[in-house]
Amino acid sequence: MVLNDRYEVKTVIGTGSYGIVYLCNDLKKNENIVIKQLRNSKRRSKKELKQFENEMTILQMLNHTNIPKFHENFSYGGNVYFVMDFIAGDNLEAHIFSNQLTFNEKESLFFLDELVGLVTYLHGHDICHQDLRIPNILLKNHQPILIDFGLSIMINSTDLAQESILELKRQDFYDLGEILLYALYTTYASKSKKALPWTEELSLEKETVHILKRLLTIQEPYSDIKEISMDLQAALKSQKLN
Image (cartoon, rainbow, N blue to C red; front, side, top):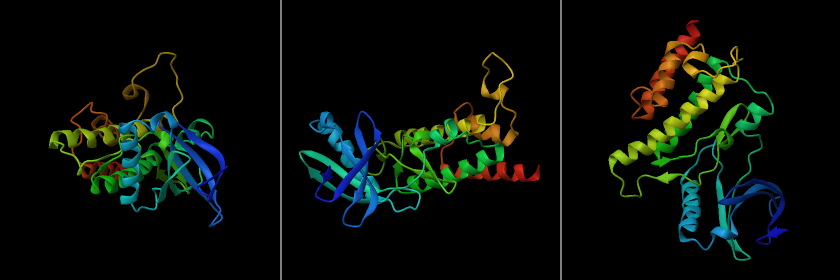
């Protein structure tokens, strides 16, 4: 199948209730690209169409080597599509569960530091990702690539109160905490049949525990990405001293 007389569909690489993602060959440039299609069942919904258009708008606003670049959008056969970069690599979920990728505490913190850099970039552009999960992070040369902006929100284009904006940012922070926890558990070997809280199962430096507790809102949650970065640098410094 060839879309828009240009993009030859090679395979489906992602499906969800909202969209279908194809790996295609751009016949004009003879290179791989990715095309996202709004599902047929969603295209008559104004809300779903607006969400699809919102994702396109956000990708067009961004210019970062660790985020796929937007190329164009088009309609074909009654469906709507947009084209973006193809970035080779498995997502973090596959690396952890299928390829047995592991992170020790220091590596987990360094990885979080890379993600914090990406979230800093997004928040600096008044964008909250809202779906920071291990399936939405690709790894390329050990660098995280952030994908799937379908749930992202532009906080400067809405009539949101400051409290609501802070809640959106804190959702991204909470998601970072979940990812850090996933990374830390990759080297954990259970010694007990009984599931215990991570605070009891994981043996971590106090600086790492402090970051996790604030990200996961167990203690006073972070209000700004710069606070996370400062605590992270302190935690990394502690790791180097040990």
